[in-house]
Image 1 (tube, one colour):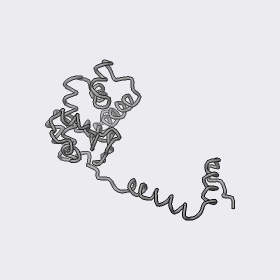
Image 2 (cartoon, rainbow, N blue to C red):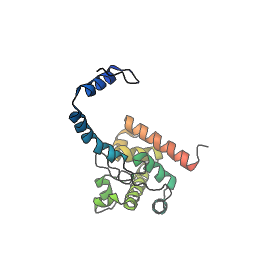
Image 3 (cartoon, rainbow, N blue to C red):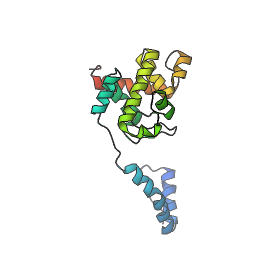
Image 4 (tube, helix red, strand yellow):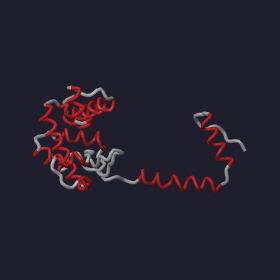
Amino acid sequence: MSAAPAEDGSAASVRALDYYDSVQPEAIIHDVAIIAPLLHKEARPRRRVPAGSAHLLASARANGLDPHLLSAVIHVESHGNVEALSIKGARGLMQIMPATARAVGLRDPDLLGDPDVNVEAGARELRRLEARFHSLPLVLAAYNAGPGAVARFHEVPPFAETIGYVARVLARYRLLSGAGS
């Protein structure tokens, strides 16, 4: 029995449908058994922190930062996902690397899973970078690519990821602070 083409009519869609028409039901059940847990993991609700949480406001104030800036960085870094983990090992709301956590005074990087600790570490890092670079685009570039890259280029490094990151954070910051309206 030949399968009708999928809505997009592509050859790949037809081949995929033909494959499932030709295999035994046990193989389909096996495929579903492998894929289903992955889908379930992706579908599970993630813990999120509200943009105006009391600790975010306190961390911003304690570090002389605009809370809208912290919210913008959190949005771009993790979309507010408390459990975010990058493939490079950055953790939490503000995607803090363990070495960065130690550099800003956090003795136990395992505490980065705590949203309050994570936001405080991120705020300290932003303050530290601001004291060094004195320019918000450079601070954000250093937060993303590392201070060494910004020091080497004396501007936002010519990395597509970093250029995009700086633009996204600045756009979100303008939106949250009402500066663009």
